[in-house]
Image (cartoon, rainbow, N blue to C red; front, side, top):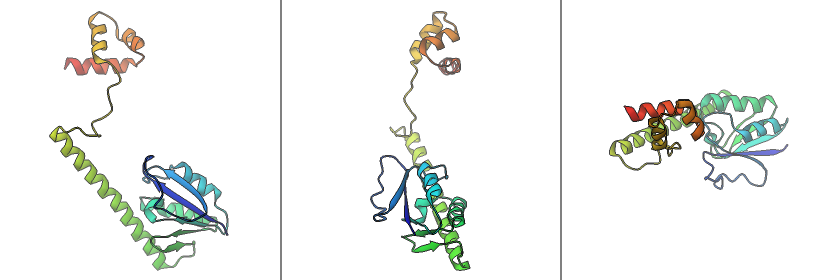
Length: 183
């Protein structure tokens, strides 16, 4: 039996230090848990063999939706391997009883609910900051096209295609900028 660890944080600047799994092979993702399109998760699922035990610090580190959580565990179990969650002290081997299945579904539902609440609070905070006109990290990225240069070229009689080529952008961007400025 080989123990295999899986850790995940949501952002590149975060670290997995608090998810101590000991001295085992670790697969680490720095990506949102909202879906299963995570490189280390895919690699770990391909690595798991019969008799292995996948160790995860907590349920919300493996998945943030009940469906994804159940699908990942089923995939591991289909290889005759188990999944253990340290924080919740739960192990799923594929031959689980009704109580274990209920616990998994409840914990997965709580994780999904928590993600929904975080997103709701985040959206509320962004809306309040925007309404106040505060500087916010959610104000969008800096404009990459010099609108003054676009308008000068257009006012000088340059065509949309010529302006787009000169600035190395698409014609659609030039049309969009022209519409924004002239409104």
